[in-house]
Amino acid sequence: MRIVYSPEHTKHDPKKEISDGQLTDAVEVPSRAKTVLARIEETGLGPVEPPKTFPQDALLRVHSVDYLNFLKEFWTEWRAEGRDGEAFPFVWPGRGLRRDKVPAHIDGRLGHYAFDAGSPMTEGTWDAALASAHVALTAADIVCGGDTSAFGLCRPPGHHAGRDTFGGYCFLNNAAIAAEHMLDKGCHAVTILDIDYHHGNGTQAIFEERSDVFFVSLHADPVMEYPFFLGYADETGRGAGEGFTANYPLPFGTDWPKYREALSHALDRIDKAGSDVLIVSLGLDTFEHDPISRFKLTSGDFLSLGAELDRVGMPTVFIFEGGYAVEELGVNCVNVLTGFEREAA
Ligand code: OKP
Ligand code: ZN
Image (cartoon, rainbow, N blue to C red):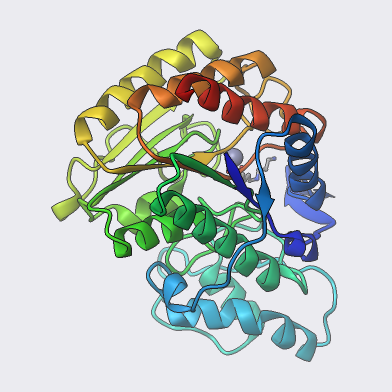
């Protein structure tokens, strides 16, 4: 399997995040991607190549121009206010406040475009997010070119980012950008299977009214887990997209037998949907020792998970999302990919 990686991600190197009522050590850190890369090299999973660059049009298929400009200009504006540390929003247009106004002040802009206070922005965030999207686009191109699979080692992750919102450590929605790109390149329909522990609220929102992108997600029940405000089983798509969203919220403590059951349902539905390609939002935070999550998958289970994914026999683009047990992250991630490849072989 060909792998796409860019060292640009190291420019997004947050030190702290707001979590559990405190400023805590950031968990979405450069070592995450580095350890996966190291494991790929150690196992010889496949050739690692740099991303190509793409015109901004590829991003505009998913994100608004205002939002992209905000991300690009953010650091200059932050510095202009005399600030130089990491940025967190602290005020939002909640109920009763205006969402149609985009303030000029950077604190107002942060609140307008953010949906949580846990996603630090730094000087290099835009460069890293842009490279991450290019990694996803390049992986998509590899599969469009006829390969049966590819892995985009994206960082920062993307599945929480909406058309004009950031949060959950995500700024550009890599999987969504890859999906639009594949549709542009002639695919008729794409399925996105999101197996990160957290619901991919951004991806779902981007495609909820679309029938050419089937969004399927297995995740911790939002009644108890981040992102809390999307990912319930009664969300099935809207308008033309009715029936093209499927959520499988699962309880804390979910282990492989339980997970496999839900995955099996999801894969049956994907099989019936008949898309031409599969994009897997690959989060490894379902791992039993993940520091911020509460599922119970073991390193060995990730091999089985990869094998299951090949059951639908579709060309597959893997896009790296979450997973914070850095020490085991490389093994867990590569286990999914080798499990998949072994089955395919
Ligand atoms: C991003 B991805 C826990 C704070 C959790 C948000 C988690 C974002 C996960 N105390 N903060 O889906 O892995
Ligand atoms: Zn996650």
